[in-house]
Length: 226
Image (cartoon, rainbow, N blue to C red):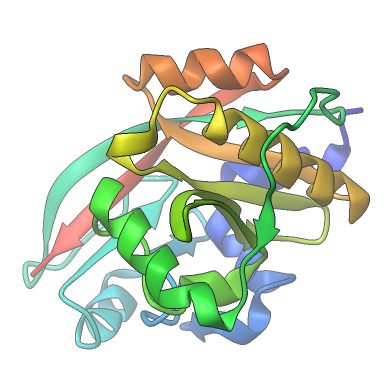
């Protein structure tokens, strides 16, 4: 079921920090950032002058992303790269059997979660990112080998994120099961799951499509450095 709210997904950081994740915001009015301990993302309202606010935020952190429209920058900062992602959405719970035990991660797992995500996808996941939502894991012989969780959250949408499997444990269907579990838990909250995947990650895109996700749009993550 599509909602008229769905256009908020065009500006996911902005609306997450306006709504469910308000308490994590560093707010400059026309542009909002997640507090850098939690997530390196910012978002802004189109058509507003934001360069000065971005400069101010950059004093707190060396390297961050603006999600959505291309930001105007002062000469203190440079656009390091544009990461183009597909934003994908799923409208119905996924009916697939889960064979492996999935554990909801708690404070005691935060270090293992942080290490695993940064081993596979370095640069996005902070020590406190796990506090933005629920994270789930599969353990083998006491070792955390695969995870998936929730990152950006608004009133009606929750982002599925950190779909990560340890390189020694890929190809066993762990990511698929974790995505199914996370998606269904989000539907249990009466919210709609969506995710971002780098546009050339063909394997992941095919997995998500098999699970019922559709491509909603392309969206850019602009990486900014000093």
